[in-house]
Image 1 (cartoon, rainbow, N blue to C red):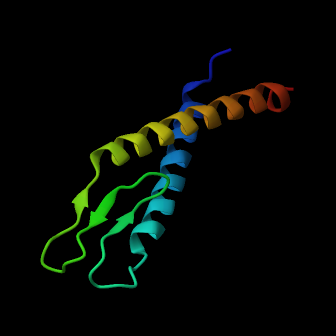
Image 2 (spheres, rainbow, N blue to C red; image 1 turned 90 degrees about the vertical axis):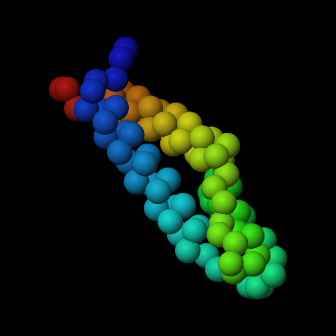
Length: 92
């Protein structure tokens, strides 16, 4: 039983929208101290603030890769659930 193309597309789009929204909210959070570093990102760290205003935040590439893998895997899982639900309830 293979998911169809539209269910894979819907699953991936919804997964990217959900993970993007969650990370958008997490990145908008403010640190409550001026001299401490702050890690941002959900479920894995995407950025590290330096704690000093003149040094920009740096990207954590392993966290970005892990977020992309989790979003892709959850998108395919959602696509499989959509496909099974369509076969079970929608084709009668």
